[in-house]
Length: 482
Image 1: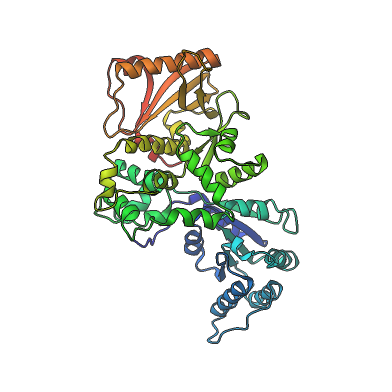
Image 2: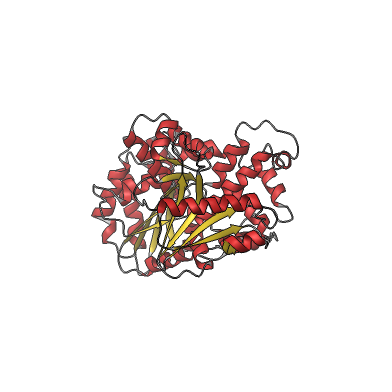
């Protein structure tokens, strides 16, 4: 389905408005993972201002990139005849300057360089040429807005935003593009005419995440189950070959990135940095840190701090919904045939995946949870896990989400995905009591502990819920605007 309306992105649109009104030259860096809607945002919002647009080609040689440049310039000029291909990027930017100069009048014009990292091939000289173009000419043109955009968030941050060479401190604005929230996803699907309830939307989000390109596969008149079946398990499904393409297009040497993602997909409690190094057989601690940073900047994983140790003992969790779904169900899938997803979703592995996916979504929507709890003071979000010493008779424990408040209260949050209202039975009540006891004994917090449940459809009221639970929220709070 083709979207005609730009959904969400309110802060981004405000920033673009400000840059168009600016009285000085602007250099905006836009970054975010593949398929998140960066190009669509820029083209849709700035279509009347873009005078030149060039898109880099993945792993293309210098000559091919320069041919693409000359073809883009031909289109911008409106020439019926092909232009001569420049010999190098210095000459290419010289030609671009000649083209842009007469267009610099009173209103801002936009130069859009998409997939910027792909233009900077090895020994291409592209980044040095762009550095020269900006510092010696473009930065003096108050009517010019240059937008450089890339899917490799880590490359953009390292080579552009934190550049230590000629582009040091030259970026005038930056715009990280995140996946849609649940609220934005709901608005996106409503705008496409899909009349799905929130439980169905949540199921789609658990498989696709808030990636607009993936959400474009959603057709009105189909259930979540039908949509997932079509996109992920049919021969021509959009997402059947996406996983390898996704990581290999973002990271130059993606093998270790994929190793880490696989390890996290099979660890429901997350892994520490040292555990990741050991499980993935990574030889260099520094190299491991670089890969973890790249995955986190690209919104695939999240570093979650442990309660009481904001700088130590952090764990990493896989929060990219599609990656988690793919590695649970699509990778080496042997089901085949019709209704593959229907068969899979009746198996025990489906239940465990639901729990992990719902937890990842809650971690992304902590601000919405805080709003729903009417917490107005500053909050520190963390998690907690306790592993007893070897030989101890004590059982381990984990708390999915902790909200440590400045009003002397700590919310201990249990995150539960269930198809109906959730029931706390006698055995689970005992486990909850033990978990809270261990937390108080080990951490000794001088605050009130509020056991808080966040579930899909809420809690069944019974004696155990009455005795233990201070606050219960359902999935509707996750659909609040941020």
